[in-house]
Image (cartoon, rainbow, N blue to C red; front, side, top):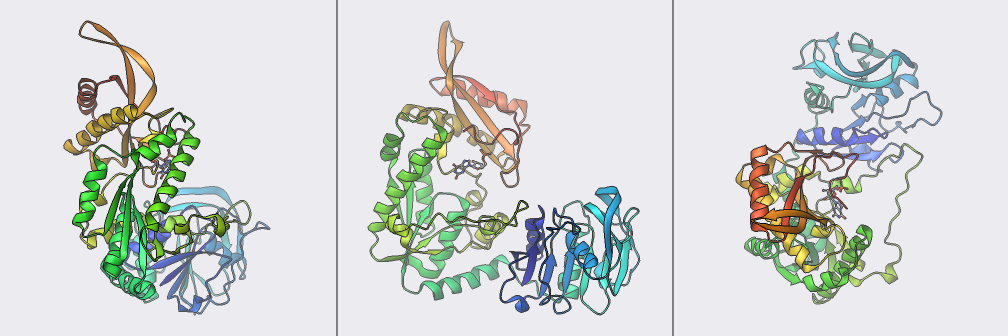
Length: 506
Ligand code: XMP
């Protein structure tokens, strides 16, 4: 196990993902909250930070249980921290050091550089520089602008680097992490999807015993993988509920339900479309629509979970990025839990919570799913928002609008699949606009709906760019939509990036 101490760098999660790619398990903890079992970790990595070590409010980690006791890799801020507070000197750089640089390796025989060629490209992002090394520091590599690009501490397994091995542009970044973690710290790379499944299933068995778990399936990757893990552990004591809110994609409720049954899951499909659509009638404010759907879901789920006698647990598909406690750059971060008022909560929320995926990144959830034999088509599905088509029908929602959008969306998505484009897109969908436009069909003037198509590339949905879909594909899709979907006479393609636009239109 590797401990990553976070100083608020935008790259901290990337460090963790790179480490996991080496099949090594790691955890991110804020620099000021060391876990109690620090000594049990095999190695520690200090992240970068937006702070300067010279600033008064700069983060000060408590390293007495780590320095000299565990192998330590200090990246960027970490490297500067070790220098500044242990007999070295850090000063503002004469030139800002951002972007590409090439390493000139002085310690060619050090294991840290095994498999790394002189001149290797690394990525820099810092405005302070290490002028003097700390006590017992030995310079290992330089770049044109940075004399102390890498150093180690004599007599310790402590390495420090000014560059970022975790970013893609550091060509040998993964090699450095491999050298440090496996060759220097002696960590065993045994964190594989198969191993995760085996240990997690055993832990779940132990934790849950003969008690019952309820879990809401959404058709998405996370809830499905969580369900299959629980199913392996407790079999039919897992009770899944799959709610049709009437805002899913065309035919999705029946096809996904069938798929779940095929996987052997004990799943109840609840068609609550009418309930959701009734509650939404006349509502056009996006946040009000979201709230209405959220509340209706809680009601339906509460009703359904009451039918499962004696359920003790609520299973959830929460993943690691949702639970990592982040270090706020603007003062101490406060996490406000909304689960205070236990008395006023629906009954299912009073259940004990089990989250088998809470330590996994999204790409790992997919790998774990694949190792359990889940259909690649399901694992590769685009993200789909909880409120579904409700936030893609701008303005108020009627069953007729849902029908139109389902038809349009199906033509678009099936077309992407048929043209081999689906997997090149991170998320795609259609939006029904609240305007009618004039058209002409045959000799008739029409005055009908306009729909927009959106397809984006992204890695996490935080930033995104529109996809340059082939004109020929757009042309074909537009024709098909206008010819086949009654009520639509115009199709437009959204060419906005996020930011400043969002992925959804509401
Ligand atoms: P935006 O529109 O904020 O979307 O750029 C980013 C990602 O989040 C999804 N999204 C939602 N997912 N409930 C959800 O479960 C919501 O209310 C919601 N709003 C947006 C969106 O589909 C995209 O993947």
